[in-house]
Length: 178
Ligand SMILES: Cc1cc2nc3c(=O)[nH]c(=O)nc-3n(C[C@H](O)[C@H](O)[C@H](O)COP(=O)(O)O)c2cc1C
Image (cartoon, rainbow, N blue to C red):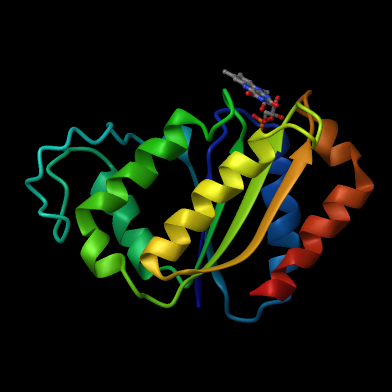
């Protein structure tokens, strides 16, 4: 089994802490191959709607797009982890998601389990914690992927989440949903 962890944060902060906790829990999954990709560390240009891909081939971008789309294609488990930027996911993560378009036809109906981790500084009453999970649930419905968890956390300073023992414990246990 392969797990792809897509980290939307450009810094070593709360999203990293969330994924560290998840990876700790995932050690309980024998023979799981985990690949974490920091969206900010790769080069994925925004989709320009050139339509050359025809939604069923490779992307013409001469960057890391095709490598990451292959990893998405091959993964049994995909975790999207993102800070909230302006009520949405980060641009770095969105650029990757937009590029799903180049293989959208073949990504449809593949057996994939999806997890979503969203971290913002606003309190949990903020609509951002409905908007972002809703976006991922729409994507999963569209592609026929199974959304197994969608968790939101409040943390502002880079070390806030790591200091929240309850949150870290909850994230560590999420591997059981896969
Ligand atoms: C450009 C930018 C936009 C942000 N927009 C929001 C926002 O709309 N809502 C929110 O709650 N926090 C917002 N934040 C705060 C981050 O989501 C928050 O600090 C988060 O914990 C950062 O995660 P990280 O440490 O993994 O990078 C924003 C931060 C930046 C840098």
